[in-house]
Length: 635
Image 1 (cartoon, rainbow, N blue to C red):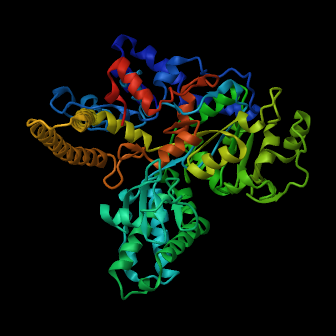
Image 2 (spheres, helix red, strand yellow):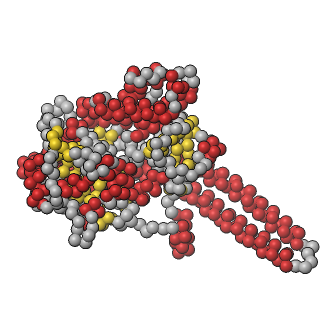
Image 3 (tube, rainbow, N blue to C red):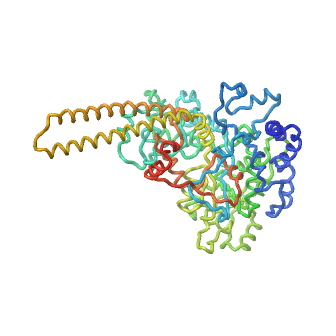
């Protein structure tokens, strides 16, 4: 951290001011916070009135003490510019060469991103959220507070692949399969019955499809998915979370292998059975320690460390909010992950696991079993967790009301770490009674998670929770949009030309109809009528042919543009020029969305979030009349 601050000083201020800058930055940094403040907090529990090193009003902390790597948010680098010739996108090699320091990638580079530009650290709003009305803020753990590396995916993939062979008797050829992260992406749907992966637009039209590893042609896709379908039910599975990418990759490879080995044991299995078998193996990997025991041995290899998580949590608590953790992971794994996020605890570093991280939460619920936790009041009993042993015991008499005295007595007696339970019990523990304005408790709770259905859709539908979806892919999507700005402008130029030609075609058709009407009213035809008709028909045919060629060019340009985002499935939020299905889900159910949870700590905990104006197609035309910017809207 101190080294990162030194480099930031070199990059941003004059030498005579460097020392003062370094001392100020270090005192306001997360490292100073953990070393000098967290010990006091642990000794005396949390006190919202306690004076902290930093506050939400400390703008300098927000600008430069944020040690998340923001280099991926930087736009185009001119390869012809000698000052940047050693720069690599997302790399600090140029600093190492120029300064001669071993610079950590954790160094903050937010200072080099113009603040007015949209960056991956922004929090985007679909539905107004008045944070002053929010009384409780909750977080999922996996892929929300903790984001994972590709090595984590490999644990699940390799473990499931090996179990398919050694446990379920799949052919040895399966052992040659290797994980490919680009086979699928979030938002796609598994068609288990047909062995396909499909991508839908917002209207549930299948825009792209692959059978196994083979893309379906346009004719095959349209003939297979010609009828309206909800694409829900037992034959379909949504890729709603980054965890599911492993399942999709292995499924596609098994389908491909089954088709290529007609004489193997796979030929006797349906595509749906392949899915059932691989899911059994992945679930077994999560239960038998193949994944979690390996993570516990070396968390730094599998978990992306984010030093801004706990300053963010502290900021919410200091602002008077209740803060809770609700995760499906069990206590032993939660303890490993949260200790690493809190202080980078590693096995063998001489520092035992402790519970200081838990002091940042009013309530901790592990083994939550979402989405059932959110839907069925009696789905799971509430257990008290013994943090020392990981054992659980029944909580026989939970609080019956949200009266502060009763809840406080319960938490003093039972502690604040539980397993199971359900949403009504959580509301009681957080004291979310109906407000004086008649608002239900759920509407004053903000939950932050990564799973589109289990964390966002279900909590919004069943409980009316305010929601924030974590979209890790957003960082790369925004960076690529900036890097491909010229390609996007060219595509929009072609679209504008297409629009103008279509308008000209409309005018020619209107002229042809007027001429036909005039001819019908005449009692005697004129000699020049046939020539005038033919002239209009020829112009219509010529323009229609030009439009046909232009449509092909636009499609090719769009395919090339989308391939830069993902070689198979294109942009996350788009399907062609339409919004994708996952984009519609995010708009409909996620009040907020951002690339990582700690971004919420970059804004005041009492600020209101407001969406941009909702616009229908005719609104864009009206806007274009005023600004001449119909084709400046983002794709």
